[in-house]
Amino acid sequence: MIIVNQSAELVSVSGGLDTIKQAGQTCYQSDSNKSDSEFTEMLIRNKHHAMLEFGWAMVRLVTDRGISHELVRHRLFSFAQESTRYCNYASGKFNSE
Image (cartoon, rainbow, N blue to C red; front, side):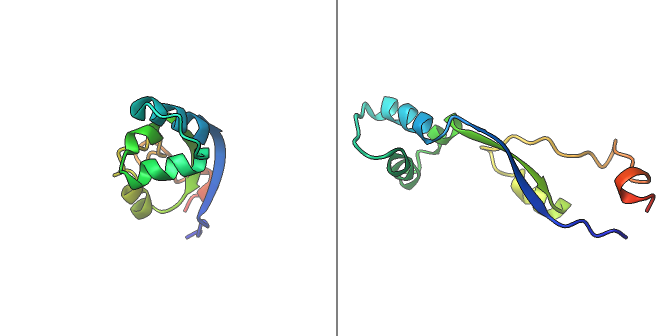
């Protein structure tokens, strides 16, 4: 059996904290002097998580199935996961194991 080390790679980021703050300010009719980071932290403390959907990051994770199944339970995430049904693990990177 080949052991594959876990890893994470940040692929791209868009709609950062400034975008989240703009969306939150719309909801609160706010002209807050708080920094983007402070305003976002306030949204999280107030459990106004919907505003976080305006910012996103694409991350490539290499991990085991158990961890991936814990992650896919989170509503705010979108997933594209390697298929154990349609990928041929008898060839390629697993050396026919």
